[in-house]
Length: 282
Image (tube, rainbow, N blue to C red; front, side, top):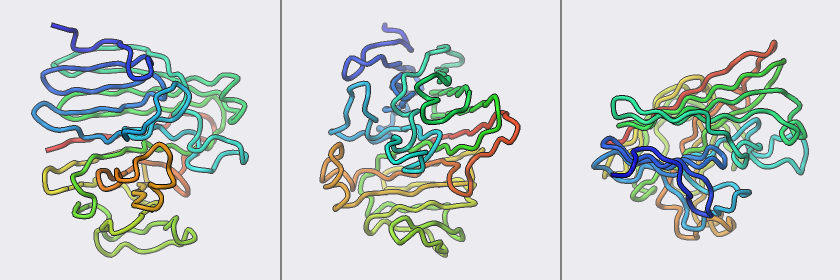
């Protein structure tokens, strides 16, 4: 029998941690500390990865759970700064692999160096711990040695049967920034439905979210995050996105655990900020 947790060559010959236990399966690339696969025992894939995703060791991987840090989107320090920061394309170090009570734990770390200081002049350590069991649990801890302000998002792509008929719970009564309408702030009186392209940042949002596509329910719980991003590119943007298939958009929905915009993290004296994400499918 092969080991329950092991280092293998993944796509593009990139190093990948592969977990295969009685509780679940998972794949985690050291490139970007990127979780690309999670499937609980007896269930189906929870995460979506595009058939056109690029696995070349330098590009971000389209799908799974990319890490956006230390800024989100185009909020970098200059026009040529990489979108969503440098963490999702960095080579992370493997600190430890462990197994206990059927659960596998993967501890990865990213530390500041000359390459990161080019974009963000802060000394930091980012510890990222992934626990694979009946649920997928992620602990993200960023420690800075000096005053720092940053954004952080776990840009999760969830696989759904058909996004148009998928229902959401956990957003009603909130407010969001509509990035498709001049960043206007709008109220969310009812639960949102995906009837076209959607790109929203819900601020002051700490609630659990559930996704129900008629076949299963995915529950997303978090701490250390007061922002949640809801995103689907729909038809036109999919056609403009080279590493996403034109007809793949109905099969996924991004619900992103985040600390961005007004919810960004400020560490005035240097400290540690912890964010957690728990994903359960039933």
